[in-house]
Length: 102
Image (cartoon, rainbow, N blue to C red):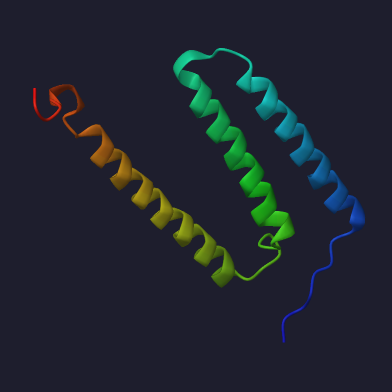
């Protein structure tokens, strides 16, 4: 039987505060013109928030190695799907598009 890890309330409050600060940073970054880096900054902040939620609120930090491996492999396969989608999008002939009838 596995042991159950119980985090103190202060941990949850700290993670909640960090998520609120990161949300405020996300809103603030939306009003700053970073050019092509706006989506990159937004995704980096979102990734950090998702990591905190996965580790602490989903209790993956204190889980078995098998659970951690499952999470990592899931993220790996999601990354593959994103890469394939972006490759499809990047290789379309957008500049050669001619509307029908012209």
